[in-house]
Image (cartoon, rainbow, N blue to C red; front, side):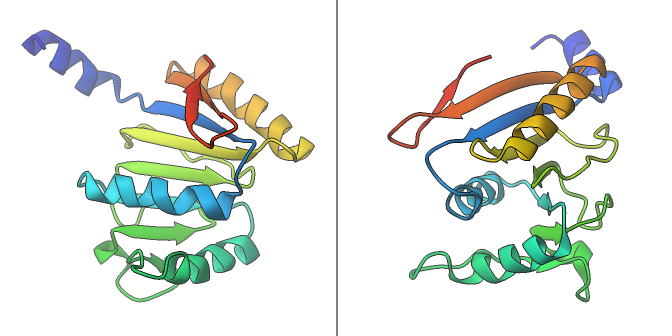
Length: 162
């Protein structure tokens, strides 16, 4: 990529924003793999839930979602949040300097200027989550972020739709 393109990208500070429409799997099935891939690629991630109960449930789930491994993480209420590869929160902070922000359960995003990527995951069987995702899509697009929409296929793969 030409030097000018890198410079423009750095100045724009716009995040790549992805919308993942869950139709075949649950959040608990989809989120751990997405977080794992982010960390494996060298990124830190922050996961923001709309309510603390969901954040707590995800915290427990990430320790046990697979028998042969776990995903190192913590909540922002625990000591040393800056050291965590994955941090769970209901707030809008970024205590672990994450490059990727995952938003679930209709969570209201913070300013995304400091992130490389934001990922909205929403349950396609929950009308409130679908409506919240539509609102987020409109705001992200209006803010100038590059937005893409992905929907699950019957075999649980992601297919880009927009």
